[in-house]
Image 1 (cartoon, rainbow, N blue to C red):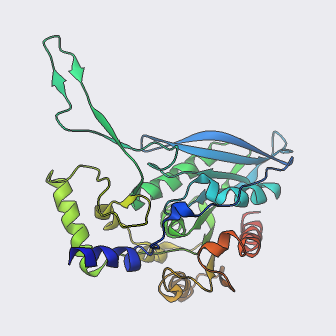
Image 2: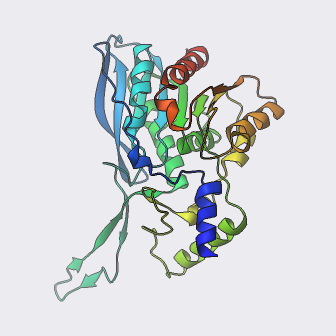
Image 3: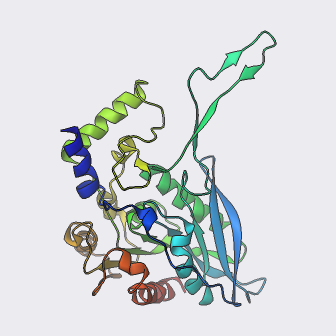
Length: 322
């Protein structure tokens, strides 16, 4: 029963493949002379996120231009969006890419482990701190996106009234959820997005995880728990109980472009991107577009589908941010 529940979680609820995301090597970005890339740090809920800022080289000191926050998916990092960032920056946008907390070179969740606080006769304390790595926590990810918007709002040359978000795969649902409660975001692109909602036996299992964490039967921040063969990292199932990107659709009123892959192999488009599109239409959102790219699968969006997908996103942001 337990194995069946976990399989159900990954195959249906979280919509991630059996093959690990680490096996995908995304094409490297070529930085043209018209764009400058700078490594920066975004502080998000006490964690340092490894980020890159892409800016047009020829910006005047007094110029105010639109900006875009990007989010990678499960197992990705800031490089997932690097080619998109270059493309957007070439056309006058300031763009930030970052690696979500606990992944890559970004900071992780810290907590005191075991009998970690001991006072000796000199009143000195010995503290053992553990850093959690490679955890998928959608609530943290939402905050990371919001913190990236905060960072851009304080960036010279950024027009804080013209900020958009771009997310891919699992990040496609994350940026939508973040945008649903952040009035600073005025345009959005979600490509090959997964919009998981815990239900059935998975929800029951996740609730038990939450109970065990609260009562100290599990570490306060779970790690290497509920792993599935072939996948990088592990989910914080208890936090998925607080994550409902489909419900968040109710608060979306901004121009939204949704891009899907015709041969999506990890979930049914009609249960995810197409479902979100239909809900937005029912709500009367005027500026919305659903575009399926023919002949590609989930990962094809970064390869054979890259030109079409990135052009669609650039056109969308150019129309609604400029």
